Image (cartoon, rainbow, N blue to C red; front, side, top):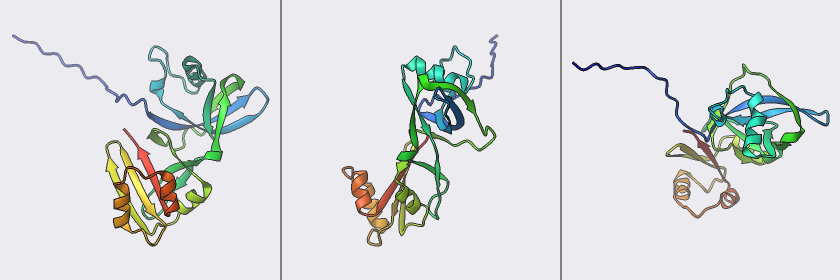
Amino acid sequence: MVLLCLSPKLVHADCLACWSLRNVEISLANGDTISGFIYWNDQWVNSTKQNQFPKNLLEFHRDKGDSVFTLLKEVKTINNDSISEIKAINEDDKLLIRVEQVIAIKEINKDDDIYWGAGELNTFTLEEINKLNTNPISFFHKEIPVTDIYYLSYNSEINKKKLIELSELSNQTHISYESMGVIIITVNYD
């Protein structure tokens, strides 16, 4: 006689590159209070410790030896007829916060929709973000493992066929695409 025992177990994917954007308010030693968004993943906390976000945020950075962490003052949403609800940031919206200057952190607007992703958000100039919120002249979407890449042309001479050709060139840089009137958006997930 063989006895087989099955026990259900909840399994989570191990995606250490994944994060959610958490809205926080930070009190600093100089008396300033700033708010914005931080990348967070409960799996970043040592599994022997209980995760108590945002309390564990500073402990996490101290344990890693970080002297600073990034606060995103504002996260922009990109919408047009080709893409929908893609989040991006402007370089000016990134603040480096010194860990030893933080007196307190509290999570705010907990019930708001949380944006999830992997890697980092796309960083664009304000001009590019404004342009991306208008409809492109042509569009191409390419899927590769755990990544979607969107090619948007704002140049009447670059149609979908040319976007496909551009997507196959490995030596093109973001700068050379910009000069051609093409903006690329990369969305990572796991």
